[in-house]
Image (cartoon, rainbow, N blue to C red; front, side, top):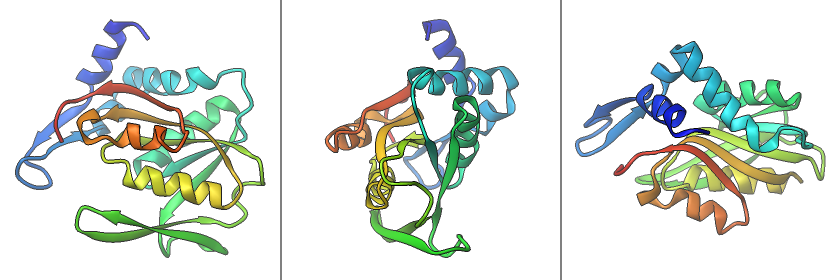
Length: 181
């Protein structure tokens, strides 16, 4: 993607200082999602590395990963798999606990969401420390998926999340980077 387009995508993301707590700058993609051109360019860029290849499913992490992942799945003619917070899926699930900054959380997936060997791309809006994405990768692998890659609109490289996924042999694709938290 050319530098001008990347700059336009970055400009379409709202930065909110001191949210949700002092010292954090929240990167709000709702402004990107609300801009038809920016949304289209972001989805096209997320799809690009996989165009023409075999991707069986796109998995999206709740909640913004649903929006982006659904659009990516549509463009790739792939199925979409939601990875949700515990207790939100109606059928038989497999869950995984993961560490948060303060405490733990759990996410789950339907046990039949993928077939063994399905090639899956994981999508979310942002990668920070990588804890949630790492749990999602492990959950997908637990039910037999081959995680082909993980894609994010935003990378906060200082927090090490992309490197954490690469250490799991998961290629990571991001569109824009922001410094700090």
